[in-house]
Length: 280
Image 1: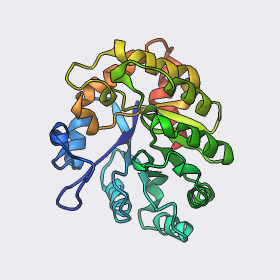
Image 2: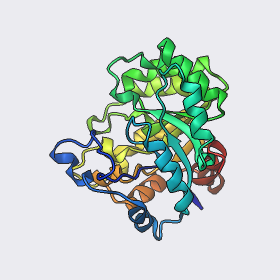
Image 3: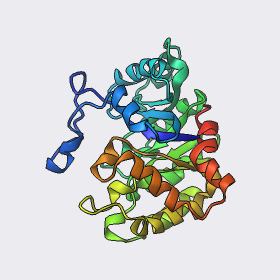
Image 4: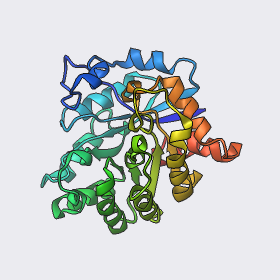
């Protein structure tokens, strides 16, 4: 069995996705609905998925919770709240008491879009993270390399809060450089309350060429060594991954990148760890 810890759905008639800009992103400027997800999952061996927010819109998360009620394989939702809001606890509480609130397992903000590299450790944001911790949810880190030092500080300040690093913090795969990304990943991984998704690597490479495990392997090796197989989880980042690779290709690449693991450790990365983190 496999859990895909990271995918999205959207309907452009309901809500725009303002991050989809430019000609190179044009393949994503269409609807991706549950039927499209079911088609992508066919024959993949994936039996559970985690649906992740795409925009900073308070209406999106309740809609995702309702979807989780009706789509068999969606087993968890990572939503959004304004962490800086004074009533952040009440906002999280309303999501958890929603009729479909049992599916809410985590909160995320697109920190990568914040110009301040220290956004995560602003006092108002730290108050929001405390609310996430008190609610018993996980917090997902969508950060750039320059924002990793702030993520390290936040993880240290909330040792009881599980942080999940999305897309390995988007390493510079296309350039082939490892530093300073690798050292900052190791610093974050030193906090035992941080888990990492093995996701998003294909879209950090050159989209014009076929996905190449040789170019991705050094980055996978860093997170494997830093987090170990007990704190690493597979994620497809579908449909964003379609910019560089089909769904099946992403799964095959992840298996190649973790081929050095024995069956038990690979099962942890592809299944058991996600079920524990998201209470699936």
